[in-house]
Amino acid sequence: MSKFTVLNHPLIQHKLTIIRNKHTGTKVFREVANEIGELMVYEITRDLPLKDVEVETPMGKSTQKVLAGKKLAVIPILRAGLGMVDGVLELIPAAKVGHIGMYRDEKTLKPHEYFVKLPNDIDQRELFIVDPMLATGGSANMAIEALKKRGAKHMRLVVLVAAPEGVKAVQDAHPDVDIYAASLDERITDSGYIFPGLGDAGDRLFGTK
Ligand code: PRP
Ligand code: URA
Image (tube, rainbow, N blue to C red):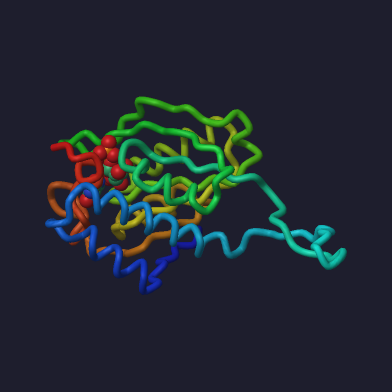
């Protein structure tokens, strides 16, 4: 069974409340969603491996640390996942970015894939799949399958708000993919939205409806 971790740092909780508020407009929603993405990735990357290197400072030679291990890539699930990418790239500016386009049918809640464009060395990278919402888990599961089909081996799912149903669906289907959320919310409503959630993340990010 994969790990499910709620990253409840006070700054993350505070910022999440800002974007939950229905009176928060597009500009602030965008800024704060990216800030939460950045804070989450800061927490998640605590376990990245390091190696020793020799560095010559103005004072002389010494042994210091740099990142070792796999290169990273960020994979937003379109559209709403785009709202977390800039925040992640603030911390990991050299990461490659792959895109997976997915939308949920409003009636059936089933996901439909419409676009996949990935770095060609995806099999050698550690992937951070980002999407603000994990509701039924259908979109995340389809995105993970699309990545695995193309050779991806190491990935983590990073969401702002998760519903218990979505966490279980991903853990059941992909026990190798750890999940990180800023909040585990109560449930999914009859219309398929997370409660209390934050509404339709894509519409709030892009000002559509
Ligand atoms: C939202 C969200 C997730 C999905 C979650 O996307 O960004 O991708 O719903 O729901 P699920 O867990 O039940 O699959 P949406 O389909 O609204 O598309 P958008 O990002 O283009 O708005
Ligand atoms: N997608 C959203 O954008 N919001 C939800 O609450 C559920 C799925």
